[in-house]
Length: 199
Image 1 (tube, rainbow, N blue to C red):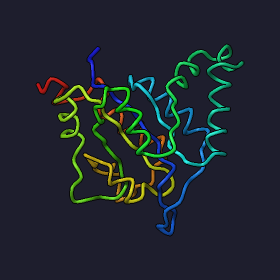
Image 2: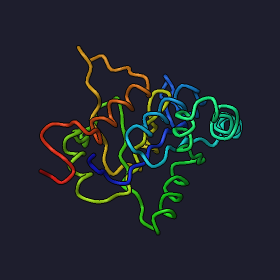
Image 3: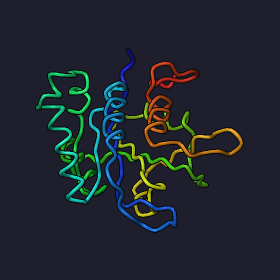
Image 4: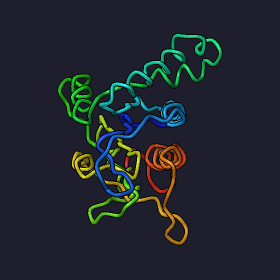
């Protein structure tokens, strides 16, 4: 199996946009917690950060992960336990970056961000994949909830990925579906034309 760089995923609950483009904090969705953890484990992601400043949401995440990692759920479904062991909680993107820098001896991760809206500086998946092959990382891939990450969140990105294009301009995927597509395009094993050694 091909090795890929030190890769981490973050699901941003703040700062994100609501339908009216106001900056808000969103609630944790159990499906997102479970399914993106399972995706992360499948693709060899090192950790999955839930990024929220809301104490009520932090307590909810802790309660859910405790059940599946240490409680009855760990005996009931060991595969789910392995996936949810990747979950970390941080109150902000800045705190997440600080946590990863601490893990990597002061080395700040390269931040990749996703957006359903096109930006002039967006890079394609093939170019981003080649970038991953140029260093050992670490990398942090950020996904937004609500109606996407607020400008303050996107400002952390070193690379902004191109949107996933649907048919006839339709682009309204759940974050779980988008995460699956993006992770496979970036670090999936069966990709044409390139690999992490640049060949």
